[in-house]
Length: 443
Image (cartoon, rainbow, N blue to C red; front, side, top):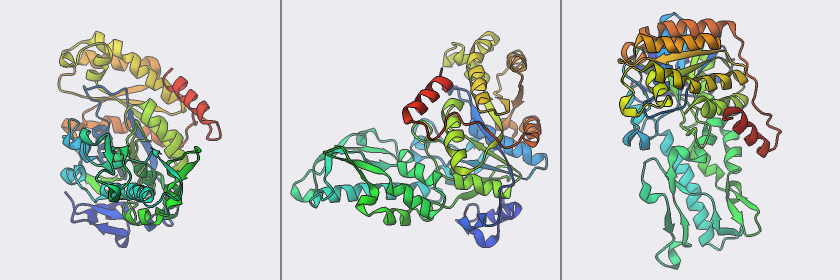
């Protein structure tokens, strides 16, 4: 690994804006954005519908960034930071794999710079104040049966999902049912990743609905006068983290909201920071295109004021075979017919990408057992769809294994303007937005 000061220097980050956390990771001060307009071309990496066979968005994102670097393009990658729960559970790490990882991987996968712990502390401070308010007379009239705000811990712990608190007598609070969620699922995490500075952060925190009164009216965090204390806990967590890939490409890793309950992408600030310092920025959206990428376009891009020039759709032959009806235990066996049957899933995602008027390149994330006949099935179908499918080997060969993909993607990104067509208008009623997403993305 290179010293993080050298990585920052390559990007043109002023040394006075760098806040090192040891030799290989650092935070970048928000003032590093001052006077630096967006100059980069944004490239979004998404995927077909996830399967247990794996798709490899993060590995492909890192590999693509490294491939662009080999082409001489000043590149950065912007990614979410992993949660401890999945890392110590069945899913494992969230830093990519093989020759295409974000490093130092152990640091990033574990406590990193403490951002997720700061989110937990701010979230649980609000929870403690809620229960303290109930205990001391409840002047806001909050209905203890309708408190929405649970607690969080950055761990998979099913025993804490549903609990009863306030037991032990009148001095120990008001007994009520509640529970714990995982820290990445906190609304505070989602807010942190959408916030544009400390003032905007405080405004968003203040609007958190923590529960309802008996008449149905909402009680917000601002009503409890706790927002300032929460913001203090999140002050440093607002700053994006800078690390690097296995080949020394700068990597902004910041924020980790889940895509199935929030918007599933790294912070807006990290993307802006990358766009202000690099010519090409690779970022990814959680889960498949219809979920994470839809939110990336309709939420992140619109709040952030940026847009991709190209969308990369990651697929594996193993996952396509599962979509074609093959059990997980048999996906390693050659089966061009199953790949062909599974292409209906890929085709739907390409259709969805086009609804945002995005240019698309398919990345076939290569596994050792893949055959040329199976690859040809995907390439031929991509030709029919009017797009290109390129084999990428980020895990085994790093940037060199993604050079061909990088060439195709950069050719598209250079000649495409940053643009997308929103799926819905923000002014529309929430019911209409839900109907639009359900019918257009899943119909």
